[in-house]
Amino acid sequence: MTQRILSISGLRGVVGDGLDPEFILRFASAFGTLLDGGTVIVSRDGRATGDMLRRAVLAGLTATGCQVLDAGIATTPTCGVLVDHFQASGGLQITASHNPVEWNGLKPFSADGSVFDAEMGRRLLAVLDSGDFSYRKWDRVGDVQLLEASAVPHLERVCDLVDVSLIRERQFRVVLDCNHGSGAVAGPQLLERLGCQFELLGGVADGKFAHTPEPIKANLSSLCAAVRDVGADVGFAQDPDADRLAIVDNTGRYIGEELTLALAADVVLASDSGPVVVNGSTSRVTADIAQHHGCAFYRSFVGEAHVCAQMRKVQARLGGEGNGGVIEPKVGYVRDSLVAMAYVLQGLAAGNRSLSAWVDVLPEYHIVKDKLHCPGDRVPLACDALQAHYPDATPALGDGLRLDWDDCWVQVRASNTEPVIRVIAEAPHQTDADALCADAVDVVRAAVA
Image 1 (cartoon, rainbow, N blue to C red):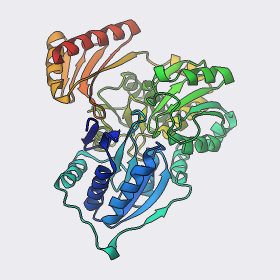
Image 2 (tube, rainbow, N blue to C red):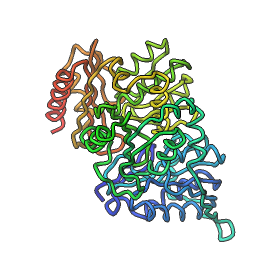
Image 3 (cartoon, helix red, strand yellow):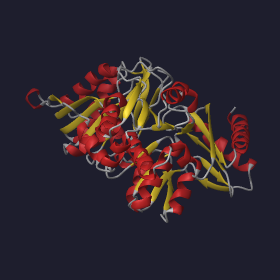
Image 4 (tube, helix red, strand yellow):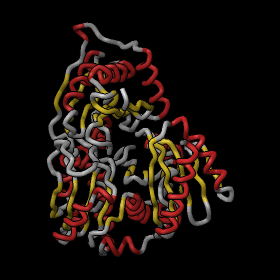
């Protein structure tokens, strides 16, 4: 085994090299044991290996007495919504999010439709480690019911957030890059409800990714070209499980993942103010927008569970991460690309302006991200070296190390989802951000060599 990552947030691994049906069966059995039976939503993101893993999941859940509602191919936020909608005991999404095609995994949801918090995650791992599973006798095993039109409850919640009539009047032209992920199920349905004319890239949810699945600039040249070719108002790119959204403006310019949350915050806070929570790797632009609207602003550790925990603590109106993940409590405590799309279209309709014009009036920062393959236990060495290298910066420890100056920052931390160290830097000018990130990477590389 070379590739398997197990944490309080769930499981990811390379199928056939760390992730196999036997381990999936154990994980699902532990999950069913933790829930003591009950109803469980199961869904998957469309990867070719998803159906094989689904069968192992169903075996583990039904063997521990769970009644399974199988939503088929669905987005990760849809899974969370369905847990709440059906008042289920929990949910399991079969996905590896933005990881390459050879990866897959499991993401657990609690009874309120949110991602597992740290306590629930630790309890699940303890059951898994013990191997003490509550397998039921023959007459008490669970069964499986297939759900039809599983995206509908999610779509209804999203549409309740915005002025559907106003958006429909504009008849926006949209290019949506689903990249053969589960967004191909719900994404077109949302755009139809909002009266958009749209072109689809990768519109079949078969997991045959047309490009590297992480929705970053280097992977979205085809989307940028398509937006220009059809004269679209906006281009949207989802990751395979559609919890993240990257955006291309009407000129074909990639404006990135970082501005997804900022644009959503600008729309929401203008009429419904309240605290905003982001993680420690997210651009300052969202903080500036919160300040502009007179709203409190908080940072959490990186990771969806940490952001959600802080959101609950401060009763946040909105939250999310700079990877294109918007968390809207009115829909569910989970990152949601459909929410992000709806809010961007609402902002375009209400502002009666192009996306490029809207982006150009936002505070401008440039964020640069890099990563190095490195064992997680060497991250403290990287943090110590970086802090010594920049003694004039204000340090924040706990989630790796973040160093802040008046107008820029740099962070180094272990990834929650890959066996890498992430290095992120941001500054008002691209050259300064590039230089800061490159310098930090050199320091980290020397420290962990």
